[in-house]
Structures are given as C-alpha cells and as structure tokens.
Length: 441
Image (tube, rainbow, N blue to C red):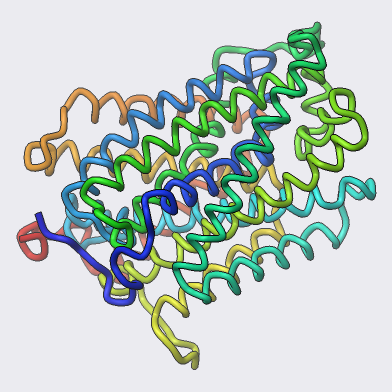
C-alpha cells in the first residue's frame, strides 16, 4: 500500500505511539468529561453513565472504518484522504471533509469555553465577558505551542495526558469512596426521561470519543503508521472508557440528577465539594484547566493539518491573506480565528449540538463510502460497516427529535450550515463525484 503525505506536513515519524495516544486522549478527555457530562445527564437522566458506554460501543464500530483505511493509506489529514479514496475529488468528499474540519473547530471552541467556565468557578463567575476572553486566550496559547512544531506538541500532550488521566481517575475513585459507593443521581427527580432522550444523549457521548480522529488526521507523522494508527485509536478509546465511567459514577455519587443538570457546565467542580471538600474543589478546577487546555492544543494540531491537506488536495480554496510561511501555518491561523469567533458568540450547549450534527453526518458519509467502494480492497467486513452506519443514523434521528422539541433553532442552523457546505463545494469543484481512478492508483 502507498503512503500518502500532505506536502505541507511535518517530517514522517515525528509522533511516537505514546504521543499519538496522548493526542487522542487529550481531545477526548478534554471535551468528554468537563464539557459534556452535565449535558449528557440532562438528556439521559440517572442512566447517564450508561450513555458513555453506549457512546463507546458506537465509537468502536465507527473506528473500524478509520482503522482499516488508515492502515492502508496512513496520511496527514487522513479523513480527507479516506473520503477522497471513496468518492473521488468531488463535492461529496470535500463537503464531508469540511464538515469534519468544522466539527473539530467547534470542539476547540467548546473545550475552550469549558476551560473558561471552570477557571472562573472559584470566583463564582458564570457569565459575562471574561468567559469568551479566557476561551480566546487558551486558543491563542494552543496556537503558540503548535507553531513550535510537532515534537513540542507531542511532549506537551504526553505530560498533560498523564497528569489528567491520573488526576481524573483519582477524582472518580475518591468521590465514590467518600460516598460509600452510593449513586445519588438515581434519587427522585421531577423530570421524566425517555428512551429517545437516552439515545439522543449518545450523540453527545460520541462527541466525547470522537477525538480518536485526531490520530487518523496525523497518520502521516506517526511512527510505523500502518501498525500504530489502529493501535493508538483502540488504546485511546479504552483509556477513555475507564476514565469516563469513573467520573460519571463519581459525579453521580456526590450529586443528584437535578444538581448535575443545574451545574451542567461545571459539574465536576460542583461534585468535588461534597465529596472532597474545598481543597478537592480547587484541585478539580486546576485539573479541568489542564485537561481542557491540552484538549484545545491537540485539536488545533489536528484540524490545522486536515485543512492543509484539504488545501493541498484542492478540495477547498486558499488565500494567504498576505501571510508568509507554509500552508499549515496559515491553516493554524484560520483555525484559531474561527474557533475564537464561535467561543465568543455561542454557549456550550449550542456549540456541542452543532458539533454533534456535523460529525454524525460526516461519519455516515464516510462509512457508506467505505462500504460502497473500498471494503473489498481493505478487507473490511460489510456487516460492521453497515452497523456503524445504522448506529449513527439512529442516534442522529433521536438527537434531532429531541432538539426539535427543546431548541429547534439549532436544528435549523445545523441543516442550513450542512447544506451550505455541500453547495459551496459543488460550486467550487463543479462536480459532485469524480472517477476514483483519477487519483487513487
């Protein structure tokens, strides 16, 4: 199999297996625990820990397509490569790839706002201009570390991953221990919860795991990529399942479901107070700052490379805007500007919802493409691909139904944005599909 490499990417082999795992867990744990626990509980109710398990199951099926394709063609900006291998260099591949890039930018702004929310908790500040200001500050910090190069990102990510996985696991264990392993979240609540709500919550839980695509998007820089991309993805998902369950049960042992929902943007910090006291509260805030900052860092790293790949593959237009240096430096700037804008103008709930819509649609397009055009070539099992597609479809329908009841405007925003992305790419590329033989052989 050939090894695809974006022209503008850094040296091959500059990211170790450990660095790739750290990047994957960096994005996942940053978004999944601190930004989404409360929102998942709001939809799933007392069963919210099970939503993380369901999200992991869906993600494992989903990862199959990415692992199989990445083993065959490891590439920087790997999802763009996978889509082009399946659909040719047309608007379908480019539109889905752009949706993925935008969902990653959305994740950056989500985690950046979460960083700001937690850092301001000791001062009892829940809103106001400081939240977007701090969110933008951490995005700029991620930009500065990224321009220092891959090895800086890899080293920083590994150190942060060890600190936060260990710290968050200790939080969960300590919270469970102090409660005598009682699960308070199951206490009576006025609100009713439905099966549709639980399935819809899985959409947000999937967001908590989708950071594994960070590894796919850096495939060209990972050492021994044909072997290590898949290993890094599976190890990252397994680590996150353990951490998420510890935290979910830890939060549920300290707070009932209504308290979790009331503090949905900072539920871990709130759960730390009764479980671990004031010192535990401050340590949790510090841990949240570390986890979310490294999550933004890893996400910026991946999406800038994906945008560079899209540019190199002529799937999106590019303007230097007078900037010097390589294309990836420019895409870093674009990423930071877009993420900062979203962090300023959208709240956490709407940012997460928009990201879920974009990601699920992209994921379905990718699975269908692999199933239709590449499954025999890469030795993929058709039933697994179809199950992954079906899981995404069921979750997307349930999530849309819930949002139509609670926030129909965000459904409209998502539908218009997705349509606009594909129409834009159709006008830019002047074709929906192209013969696969033009570029794949």
